[in-house]
Image (cartoon, rainbow, N blue to C red; front, side, top):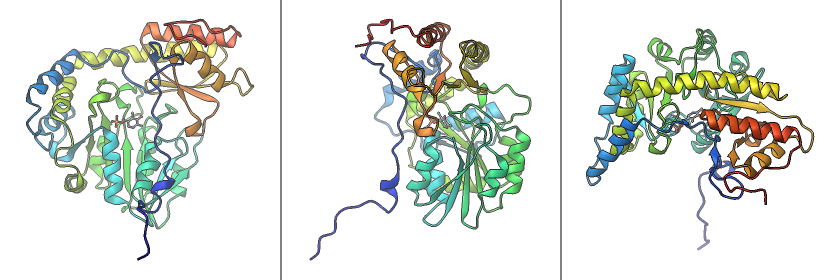
Length: 377
Ligand SMILES: *Cc1c(COP(=O)(O)O)cnc(C)c1O
């Protein structure tokens, strides 16, 4: 008998695995990690306590629908808990949506510098990712609509977008929805919604309510500081919630994660403090980096896309190496098609000042100053 080798479905091996932000600097010493848009204050002490307390019952299966969390989210936002589906991070929900609505022969659209989880989940479902060009590093509604074909089934849009930090005003999001055919699912990924302070912004709840083909996803990984716990949620039209509930794992969130999510949402003070710190330092960092001669894309989120000159020795790669040798980790952007930029998460005041000092030294041609035991070997 002819032997056939084990192989995944067609297309799977074309996927480039997601490369997370690094967590160790050159030299391996303690690092200032500003590469993954995490909360520099950690998590609410109440959420940590709830997580620990839930550890006393590790032998028991969790309540499968994360009802306690859905009810707390529902009460906080005025939403029907039956239309909320929780996931192990919002990444799981992005993936479940692809699994449910996409297959071979289908197309799904995302924007040029959109979040790289989208092409992964699209291709993992066997569908074809279609890239819509952006304008000024911002999603362009007309370009997205121009990519729609007979085969289009899903549009993924991060608002604000990671890694650019740019956002679409609600009117534009509405225009996108109105321009898409009815059978196309619009997924609005509002991972950074809590950081946006723009009068013309909305995360998308009213669009979900007004249509039966729009979903909004949210996460506890960013402002709530629970990235390690993996907690996300989707607000869906009833029929989409039903679809997700059919295909998700029956116990897809762990009990400690649900408990932490509930406690995090109830600690308004922690979230407010985080948003306020970010508002101040997003502005200060933008101005100070511009004073150093760098170009910063205006950000609505908790990170900045910082553009470096293209000349060798002063470019983004050299800057990244210099920062890393000084114990500071930013995010390289080659995989996003932005080789001359680094993404910088807003840190604590001390971390932010350290970044500014090291970048100033770098741009002035100073050698690396050894810090935190992380030397330039
Ligand atoms: C960080 C991030 C998420 C959150 O992912 P989780 O799986 O919830 O941790 C989702 N979308 C975007 C655009 C992000 O940057």
